[in-house]
Length: 90
Image (tube, rainbow, N blue to C red; front, side, top):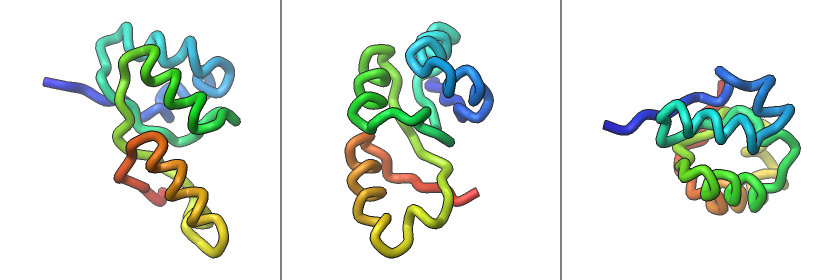
């Protein structure tokens, strides 16, 4: 069985040091993460950290504004970079 963690559970740690937070998440035995923030990192940086720690991404919780007007193009690009097909509006 594979397990995932909603990164909101470790939000303050993730925002301080995404690399360390993801390392610890992987050490705990999780296989996947679901984002609520990207800690001001580019999608390429986030993808590299996921690969480094052998974690997959299963979704993201983001504001609806990222699906509106001009923002939607960048949002779709970001989702594709991380291989995400789930966008949750909290």
